[in-house]
Length: 192
Image: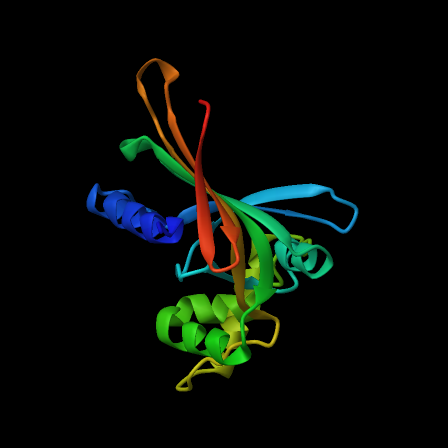
């Protein structure tokens, strides 16, 4: 049985080896309770047996959307490899311990301070407002470990479907489609 998320991991590695600057960048689509869509690029921060992970401010547009409607879609695209991967599933917040670990072990200090300084997606008068808050938090946490704010953390997309697309000549693209059935994946081909 082929697990398409194993292939996704390989493709991310292939893109990194090909010199892609952001091989883990994915377009993440969310929607409000009423179904109004929104899409943005986020960084995938882990691929597991059943899921992919990303981190954000829970009070951001995507965080609010996910609180109202947990259905999501994500797309990776690597032009240099002529490949894309599309995922659909349900997002759930990661345990606090996972968010703490990622925040402290993988985010540079400046990024941790920015998490405190910016109320992501909230209107501001100017970027200077955020820069001032950043400086205030820099002083507040001087000589200390910058802790994770309660409003910042991770999500895990429990993946239900995956499409692995490889470009073909004359638009004869290979489209491998995977649907989760219990602990297995059912694979079929889609017409280009």
